[in-house]
Length: 489
Image (cartoon, rainbow, N blue to C red):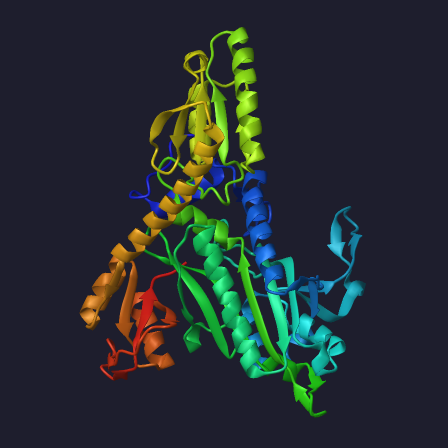
């Protein structure tokens, strides 16, 4: 068994890195800054995909796929967009290799592309060039499209799931006839992300809009959800952008309205990525390993037999076979771990590390008493349950665990949310961590100075909060309301 994890209190960053590898979620690859997502980690992503894909389709969206390579000239059409991504782009310049005189391989200098290709950092440009051909009339709108894809943003300082040069995500791109309809779409998708984070991931989130300094490159408005991790840092868990007519004008995407007049369409884009797996780990897990919400756990129940003789093993297997069938009939994913090369204690530790929500243990005495030992991962509590109606009891326990995981994270966020009114209090609290609600004068200059001095950024300007006038913590100038600051991933 792997060595014991570094504790969160001792070194949170090291704890996270060790856990991702030890639990078999991902590992670094031969390509610097990139990761291999291992089967157990990818199965979590598959569950996320499945749920989100259903949510997208329920709101009227369809899936499509667009090219990985984007002509460099496309990026020059939207100035803010290219400025925002220029330093992160991987560029393809040649299309062929050849053998050199020494027997090695070199890039063929005669195979230079006429126009360099950008490896997709995000797809607005290639998609809006395509939409120009798809949209002619108001009858073609709204156009509601999503794609599941990989993207490349050239990162030098990386961390598995949280920040890698290549990662997996979905990106929605929609076109609308009116500004109001596009804004409603951006807000709707923000709500979809928030519902997913809270109801499936068990992660409470704040909803709001980004400040100008933090806004997506090329957007008019960026909506976001922000979560608080156990080390007091914020993590942006999803964004939804109102793009106005910026990309439509850049790529000349127009339509004939009902009055037979030509207009540019209104646009949105929105996305979440494999970063959500990082959020899942950091929001819930403990020093013993992963703590996974049942709704996204690849294995919801593991059953471990306890025996000394082969005939006991066979009898337990028959006893467990019916339990497995009952659990699966309720849609519960279950694994019977009857590997004979590992002892029960090893298996207990392994499945605890992997965050399986419920563990059942069955031995000869349990069969005699018609009972099952049940252990829950979130609290590490154990109890003996009667074999009768065990599936219904486990189903109820999984619901309890899902609710408890969310409530624990919500309690943590509330305990680590603070209002401050002075610069000294702000600096002191930011150093300790948490969400800090403070007044800001609304200027990008002040926001940048605060970031330079404290490394804290405005995570969001909250939605749905009443106005509370005050004075900016940094300049003393008037403020229309509090915003949420934090150090962030």
